[in-house]
Image (cartoon, one colour):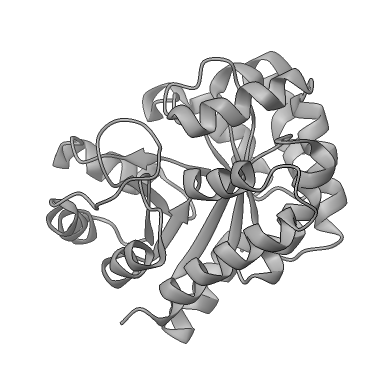
Length: 267
């Protein structure tokens, strides 16, 4: 059992939902990313998605794109992200999930990636532009090291395909709350309860929901109908809002703490 499965099992026994925070590695710089991730852990997040900045992020909205572009100007590479994870693993217990596109993985080499992830203390991988039908090599490589390859499902995913995703996704299923790209939104998609019920009838593993969740009320709303909540753009927006301020890390931690509290107390 890896750290992701262990944490999800603990939460299930406690009757609580998972809160997963996304952060772009290298925005505004790697030193602050490290401090922010430690603060997120203190704020009570159950897992952290480490976003690898990429030049063509097909799933990401303007907020994550902006942070990725800034991180790329800081010359962030996959090797630097692995080093960051290795430093953090000695300081935090939360499972770490690398959120990246297929190109950086392919460039590094499929045969190397599992060992690099494991030695860095990373527990799973989300690759939004990789289809299950084309993931055979990567799936086999991660399986050798007991690492999770987590697939995404969307409102437009047909039930027949949902069954395939539910079968192949490891750790949990990442459900995208709306069609389109990431980004904080004012409201939650109206069809989410219907689609969560549809997935739950198929999947025997946890389903967490991301894309568009931006405030405590929305986090609570999603937590009531799912196994967990993912927040990314709203956290990056908080980092942007506090850039240059001496209390940036504290402010972001307070914001995330409110989201965590709302998700945990949702009934």
